[in-house]
Length: 451
Ligand code: UGA
Image (cartoon, rainbow, N blue to C red; front, side, top):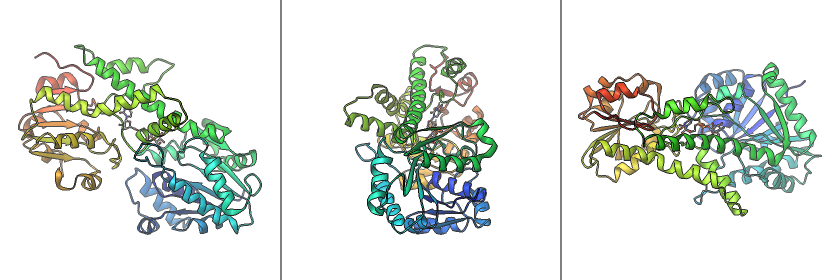
């Protein structure tokens, strides 16, 4: 089979990882971005953001001369056979989905197709509410190009399930591929592309074919159920804190071993953040509410999550009476380890709240997220170069993100550096008994030991 030429609209972590993955396996790829500086950086083989393994993959793609980043979607469409849409679908102020990038890129794709004779397949990878592929993307391409879906161009929706920090691995080893198809021909072309790309891996990775709208809703079902598991674990953590000697980690380990469940996403902590769970749960909730259905579980998931980061402050208040004039340490700023992303991160909620409590100084340390943190907090907080520096002279430490380098810390590291060793473990990475013996220690999902 001759490899189809691929274009990808959008160089965010999904678009760029996919572009580099196809290019590394011999496909000719044109990726597009509206940001010239970003295009230049990628064309030099450098990554514009941190994503584990992407630097090597991108270097390989550029070395093979298979990947070019440009700013013109029309040109990209005219010089390819299949176009993937991977543009952002952020949250509006009212928390509904903002489809403006989808609308714009669809029009540009339509313009590109107007002068093209050959059949072209368009595949949406962006997360969009049900009906968007058919009624916005399809209709807009039809209008701008004067061509017909099904005969002149094909249309698919293939949700992506890449987690930040694992995006390269998730791209090469997916657990399933969902193909929503306008018609059989569209789905067949995408199916063949993946047969060629994944080869033997497909023995362990079912490809499910379905309607465009079902595929759109699979993505929301997926993220909402994962977010529900996290909020469920956090609700149980709050229940666990009512009773002595109950430990949420032990409870969720026991629950997760049920053969009908699994133990993933049952880690209690400071709550979920990132660019996906908060945005997607809110988007599908607003969409359903607009259509007259009030989703009770989703509202509860968000309510639990809204309070969870602040719960760390409530716990800290049991250790120190007031934050007034105190020096506070925050270990971990990104919304989870292995990424520099701070969107909707629990650390942001905690720091903003502490800033209203009259603290003397907030000292922070994160292995990757300083650039992002500076954009948010400017000079309102201190950015330290080591854990030790962040702990020096501190009255209270919040462990907010479970980076590996924090896991090796011993009670003595806190004792020798802090003015007063008060520690709140917001991710349950420390041994409760050992740390409780040596420090003023509290943890999510565990009532304090009587001393
Ligand atoms: C999530 C999904 O896992 C991906 O499958 C999906 O493709 C992606 O959203 C997306 O829609 O693009 P991501 O947001 O990168 O990926 O991060 P996760 O690893 O899912 O973590 C989300 C949040 O839940 C983090 O803040 C994490 O700390 C929190 N979490 C996760 C917990 O608090 N407890 C857990 O047990 C697991």
